[in-house]
Structure formats: structure tokens, C-alpha cells
Image 1 (cartoon, each protein chain N blue to C red):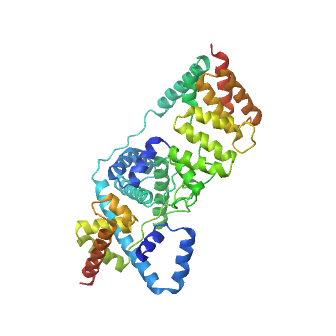
Image 2: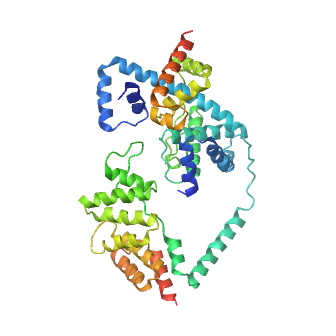
Image 3: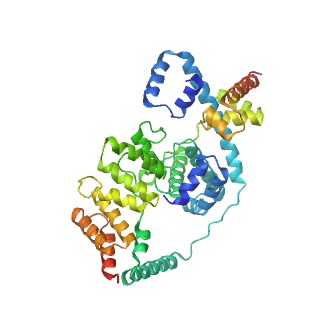
Length: 176
Length: 239
């Protein structure tokens, strides 16, 4: 893997969205070229590419990516996987050509259950500070100590009590 | 450990295998724990979906490139071929300074001795040493390998110690470590001779570099075959 890719992955692991934008722009032309060859319209190709980049970002962020060569080949592999998956779902196609998706454990996002939808709606109504602390703990999987390091909280007790208040608030929003 | 913290670590794959096992055993009988994990998962997925939406919006606002038909692939391929052929002839015919040869051929060797499991904090000092090496934290890798070698003078550990030193540009110390491996038979013996030869080239010690390369050829003629031949030719050409 090139030093540039390593640096980008490091930034993405630290949740740097500008690094994600850099990855997105750097590989867009090649991806759209591939999609065009598969007969996808520009709009569908862009939609697919955005899903691929987002899945890549979330995998890197939560440590489940398995990049061994380069970001570009990983994205292209994921793209092929998702492209054939979509075709399969539309029943227009065919088994997945395994040789083309060697490196890719891409998962389609699950449809949310009713309870998860309610949590999502409630979460959107929380204050920014609540959203942030819950995001860091539940989504990024940071410990209370790591949250202290990355934010302005003074210590883990403050984070813990703030998180607890936010959860109560969320629960209240859902039950109302 | 606080229950919430345990669940967080469990969900994000940060428990040790023993802790995970313990958690899964507890899960079989503890309904409250199962409920707490489900709640964690629900909230995690809800936030994840929110994040996806926000990211989609953000990426959607970026400019779109319009791929054009590639009109000149053959021309580009031909130019590259010319460049490669030209460079090859240049490299074959020119005498290259030994330190440039070192700079051209030196690359850190991958960790093939002790695979590190992703998503798990390395628990023992051996794993910590190799995790540090893989991540390019060479001073830490060096310190940990040094300590490990005190109790277990394993040639593989010493080989990676030498590489950790090279990673810090501490070439003299690296060479001393590789020197100590000369009489050992081990998995990375050919590689050790390769790095030794590079270090000797860097020092301008052409006679020794040649001996190391010949040793490497004798030991494993399939390792770095072309590079070894090229370097031997370069050594012959040196004034």
C-alpha cells in the first residue's frame, strides 16, 4: 500500500471527513468509467459510488475493513460487488463473479426495524452535544477515556453522566 | 468493568477472546444482558443510518467528474513502454552510486513472523512488538524486541530487530544485528543477507556487499533473483 493511502486511512480512522472527500474525488472518474461500461446511467452510477464510499468509510472507521492492496482497488472491488448485488436483487442477473470481488466484505445496510427508526428520529431531535457523545460511544465505539481525549469533557465521570442524561432524553422523546 | 463498557467492547470486537467467551456464556442465561445488547445494537444502527444519510448528502454536494471516452490508451501505453525500456537501458548501461542503489532497493520487510489479528489489542509483548513494527513505530518495536531477545534469542526476532533499527536509519546498529545472524539457519536467512548487502552498499563496502549477494544466491536463488544480478553487475562496474 502506498504511503499516501496509509496516510488517508489513518485520517479516516480518526473520522476526518475531508480525507474521505479526497478519496471520493480521487477515484470518482475511474469508478464512473467502470459503471458506464456496465451500462449504468450517470445518476445510478453516482448513487452506487456514494454508497460504496460510505460503506468503505464506515468499515475503516469501525476497523472492519480488510484493505491489502490500495484504496482504489478496494473501492472498485466493492463497487463490482454492490453492482452485481443490485442486479441480483432486481432478478436480472446471475451469480456473483467471485474472482472480481476477492477483497470485499461489503454489506448492504440493513433495513431498520420500527424501534431503530424511532431511535433514529429521536436521535435527530437531541442536542448536538448529546448526538456527539452518543455517536462517539455507540457508533465509533470509543471508550469514555477516549471520548475525554477527543472532546472538551474534563473526565470520564462527566462523559458518563452526560451520556446517561442523553439516553434518558432519547428514551423520553421516543415514549412521547 | 462497567456493564455498558463491556457491551461496547463486545459490540465493537474489543474484548479479549476469554472476555468474549465469558460474555457469550453469560448471555445464555441473562435476559437483561441480552436486552441491553439489543438496545446497544439498535441505537448503534440508528446512529449509523443517520451518519450514512449525512455522508450521502455531503458527498452528493461535491463536484462530479464526467468520464470521457479514452481516446489515447495506445499512445499512453506506448509512452510508458518507451519510458520503461529507456529506463531499463539507462539502468543497465549507467554506473549508479552505491548509496543510490541502497535508496532504490531498500524497502521495509513485511511482518511475516507473527501475524497480528485485526481489531484486537495485542495482548502479549510479542504481538505488541510486531504490531508496533507493522505500524512503523520502530523505536517501540525495537525496545520490545530487545526485551524479548533477552529471554529468547530467536533469529527471527533479531532479524526484525535489525529491520526496526533500519527503519530508524540506525544503520550501524542494524548491521551489527545482521552480523550476528550470519551463522544461523532460519526462515529469513536469505532476506537477512539481502538487507546486509544493501547496508554494505550504502557504506560503500563493495567487496563485502558482493560476498553477501553471492551468499544470498547460494542460499536461495529464487529470492530477489533479478535484483541480485543487477546489483552484482553494478558492483563490477563501480570505479
